[in-house]
Image (cartoon, rainbow, N blue to C red; front, side, top):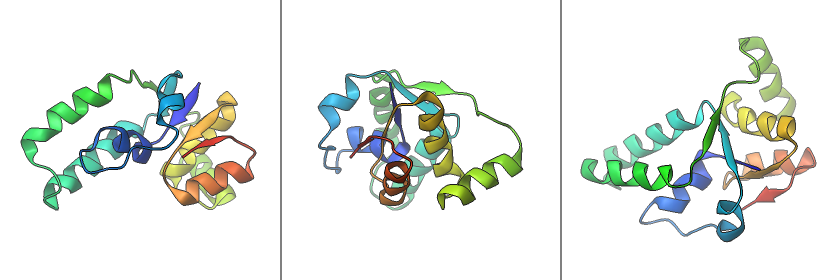
Length: 131
């Protein structure tokens, strides 16, 4: 099992992105993501359209491509804002990024990310990181 964040997932499908070096090994595993993942993906796609990186008509195909990876979305490990704040503070991350790290810690699995801050935090926590 591998927790996959939005930066890594989008690099798998975006036409102008270089594919992650660990892609072959990562996509063979069971992929999971926290409940914030679809929102982060949608936000990145929306920003891509706003900035002219993508056209609106490309988004459905990119989402379909992401769907091919069968990423399991996992409910939050806790629902209290304070717990999300504490996790973010403990790892010096945003609450969004901390949710990926917390899920990987809970499931005792690797984390696939292209976010350098998140990768460093995962390594400090003793997790394997797919870059």
